[in-house]
Amino acid sequence: MEEKKLLVPEETYISCGAEIGTQQKTAHMKPFIAKVRNDGLYLINIEETDKRIRSAAKLLARYEPEKVIVAAVRHYARKPITMLSQICGFKAMPGRFLPGTLTNPNSENYHEADILLVNDPIGDKQAMAEAIKVGIPIVALCDTNNETRFVDFVIPVNNKGRKALALTYWLLAREILKARGEIKSDEEFQYSIEDFEAEL
Image (cartoon, rainbow, N blue to C red; front, side, top):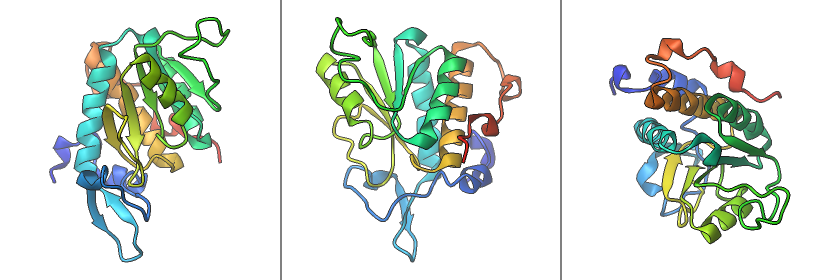
């Protein structure tokens, strides 16, 4: 694997635990799994993670920023999705996703959206159910144990670890700004991975 082909060096993905999956594997996620460790933990193919972060960024960059909703119930994902949303102009919905947010125009929490990014199809099932109901596409960070039946675009990555989440959303933010032409190079991106890391 040539490092120049990756968004960050392979060592960065590994040190952040981006490739660490779970001890469960779904048929949907099988194409993204590189191998299984002796302790039964499945490892995600970093090249697939890298390629799909790139593609997801290009996809998300095509939408009006205020029409992109980013949802995450998981505690360690709340800061990274908030940072991503502040930098890219998206609407972050950290914590519990309130019913009716996408489906009930009479709700004070209602938000019209054209695309949804979720941190985990399991934890963020309320947001996914509403996106399915209104017919908008879903991009999701998916671990080895996720079902992807209703996900339109999968980003295969450790969607539970604090550092892995910081790295993933940091890369998405950087690549979205590049895709929009707001920055020309990686060096122009003024944030560090640590800026995206949730507190312990």
